[in-house]
Image (cartoon, rainbow, N blue to C red; front, side, top):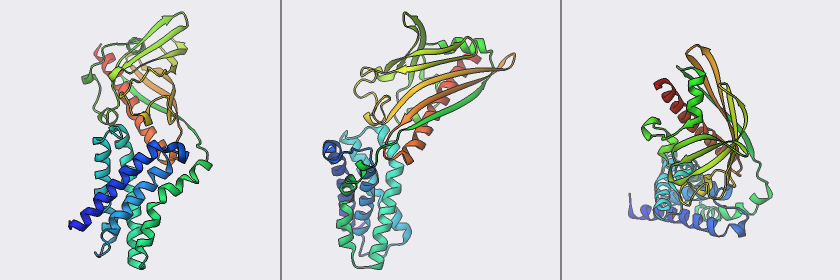
Length: 315
C-alpha cells in the first residue's frame, strides 16, 4: 500500500475513534448514544468513504471499493479495544455491521469519483453524516421488540432425573459446557443455579463468572413437568467489568424477563427437554440488534440444555 493511501486508512480509523468518543461523552447533546443509527450506520459509512477517497488517483474495481474500507474498520475496532473504549463483546457483535456499512460507504464514494468530479464535496458532506443523523433520530421513538426463544433437546434420562439436575446445578465446570460463540466473545459462564425455598416463595439463585449474581422468583411449578421463573436484577447483579454496558441484562437496550423448562416424556428413559425464554431488545438499530439477540439467546440456551443433558445422562 502506498504511504498516501495508508494515511487515509489511519485517518479513517482515527475518525471512527473520534466519533466513538463524541457519541459517548456528548450523548446528552445529541439525544442519542453509541447504540444508534447515527453512530452505527453513519460512522462506518463515513470511514468507507474516507478510505476510498484516499485512493481517488487509482482505478478501483467495484470489489476493491467494497473491501478497501475494511482495513480502517479493523484498525478502529482494535483501537477501541486497546483504549478500553469498548469491550470485546460489543466489538464482536457490532463488527459485521461495521464492515458491511463501510463497504457501502466505500462503494458510494467510488461511484461518485468514477462518475463526477465532486469527490471532495461529497466527502465533506459524508464526514458530517453521523452528526446530521442525530438531528432526526430522536424524533423516531425506539420500539421495544418483545421476543420469545424456544430450544429443545432429547435427553436419555427420565423427567425426574432431569428435574433434580435443573433445581440443583452446582459447581458447573467449564468442561461441562460446549465451546460456543457466546462465551468465546466474553459473556460470563454460569457456575451455579439452585432453587431454594424462602419466605417469599421458591427462588432461583444464579451465579456466573466475574461475580455476576441474580435471582428469579418461581411463578409456576409442576414437579417433574414444568417450572417457570421471573428474573430479578439489581445494580449489584453485574459488577463493573463483568459485562459490557451496552449488552448488560436489565439495561436500556436488553432485558431478560423469564425462563421456563418443559419436560415431556417420550419413552420411559427418553425426555424432550425444552427451554423457553422471553426478553426485550430496545434500540434504534433493531433490524440488526434483534437477529443478533436471537442468535445469542439460542446459543446460550443450547449451552444450558447441553449441561443438563450431560449431567442427567451421566447420572
